[in-house]
Amino acid sequence: MGTNYVLGTELRGDAGQYVSFDGRFVTVSQRGLARLFAGRSEKRIPVSQITSVDLKPPTGPLTGILPGWIRFTTAGSPNAARAGFGSRGYNARHDENTVIIPGKKALPQFLALRDTVEEAISGAAGEPSGL
Image: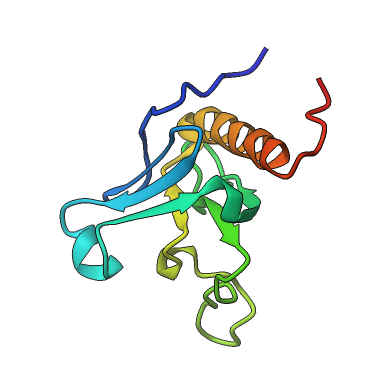
């Protein structure tokens, strides 16, 4: 059996990012120097406004050479920030609804968060939960 997410638990992302879910809101926040680059220190997203949760696991040996991320997409959110040179890649560091997963050790917690938020989205939309 996998890791379960406990409502209200704050998960630490990379570079001063944090994310939590209380059953009604996903809160993405930045602390320390990350606040200088993020533009705001906290964003609360109502679960009823979240249309999808995208997660890319870290890749590479041990801690993951390439970072992973979790993104909370809303109906009114702009298109994903694009990386430089050719603009084909997704630049998670510049998306206010995205938290960088700090390594493979943290992945089970972020997967549990994703599953919990997706279950809440299904419940908010009136869809059967499949249980």
